[in-house]
Length: 161
View 1 (cartoon, rainbow, N blue to C red):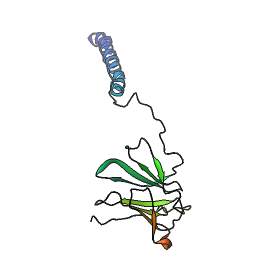
View 2: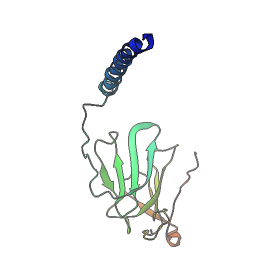
View 3: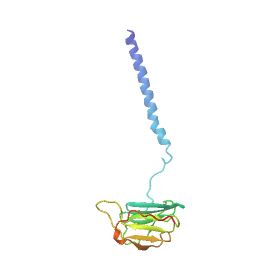
View 4: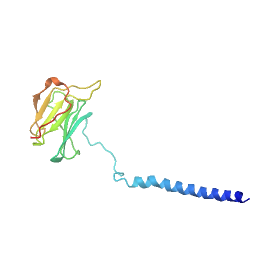
């Protein structure tokens, strides 16, 4: 009879432990969610519009809010001077193709920017480019400097001096 009287007591204790564990674990996701620093923020599109698929991005180490990106699918070259809040298209009147494979900024002079046209991604529908361009005024004006027959420029290295 002793073992029969212990059964309900064990059952009640187990039920209490399961209930306490359920309550404890059900509160954990809420506490974790409340600690997320960006939880109340919502995503919003800030541009650039019609930029296309991004193929290359580079920044300017001496100017932490300046970035350039090149769109692979025909969107051209874009620049931000405020850390990405606003973007402006560059070279739309100069570049013969909009597909960009590489961008590089000179470390010794951040006004010197090189753009290699033609996306580097190997897939069935890539857009070819028409060579290399150089800007000496941080993207305001561009000059074609050659490599027209390469069609796809995937990387540019600029000598540090």
